[in-house]
Length: 170
Image (cartoon, rainbow, N blue to C red; front, side, top):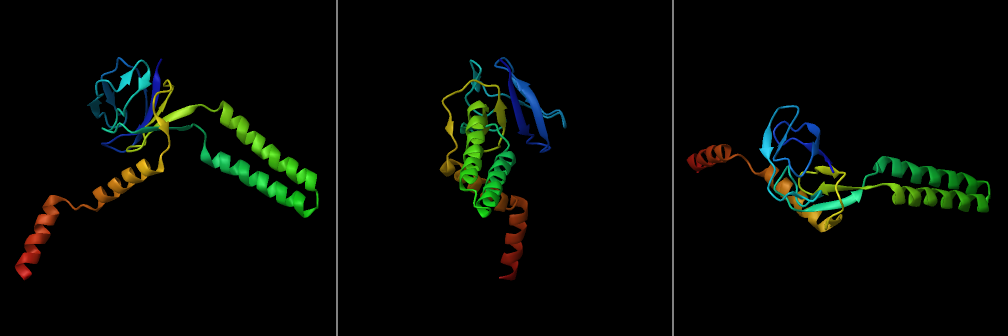
């Protein structure tokens, strides 16, 4: 079984789509040509056990469904039910609401899962279900805070120059 991976290249930050199998040992960017080794044991028996783009082992399952389409279904159902409620069509209002909910349940049942990395947001499609759990806000927030702290840290060369300037004026 071949796994499709969509990821942002760590070098050029371009989005890339690659096919990946358990026998592959390298992953490369088709835009800039950068390559990196796939960690041993990252893919085993068509199951992704850890991210192959970054060193993270924390992955989560989510439905592979466009969120904007889901929001559009909810908004359309709400709008249509408001119109029918305005014209005092109570049964039609409930029919519209239940129809929107039914569409949501049907889509939930038939849409497959995608495995996503918390750290680099790489998405793995076509992989067998593994031991990964659904989205956890606490883990997501930890990774988000770590990214924010890393962006705030100045380069060592810049901080050294700033320190020497401030010491000279003291």
